[in-house]
Length: 224
Image (cartoon, rainbow, N blue to C red; front, side, top):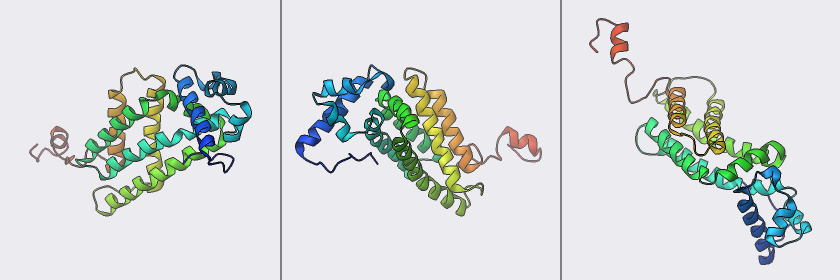
């Protein structure tokens, strides 16, 4: 899930140098946007040469791409909760979104840098897209199972729909990464509702949509 070093070097010294570069990058990103960080900034902080940097990474964006695994691991845990957690579907989606935003935005500086790297570095972009597709496969399997059981209505291609749902999460994370002190609740509530309505075609699969005032208005002979 992460860019491979451009060499088969696995020596302890090589590992320490690579780790030192990633630590330096993490620290710099806390106060400085990726575009304003130079390779010299990182090599000076890590105490290695410029040529050593390019031994491990072909660019700053490639170095940031290594950090993508952290985000994808958290996203994978969120999907686990959605498709196999406890409670009704809305509860699971809400819990997954809350955990995902808490964990990822605890390192919002990394997510912002990844967004920049994705736009400029083909390998990071490819890894990001591959990670999304892997997550979507599991969501699509869940969609097909719910449709086959009659709990969810048939609809558009499950794989395409699943990728669209993952995109919702990415949009929420992007907005919050750029405004980490902003109010999360409205965004998470709307995102959860979009997941529920997209999958089940109604507000909540645990609630019969034919109850309440709306149903009574539609069918005066029925008691609400």
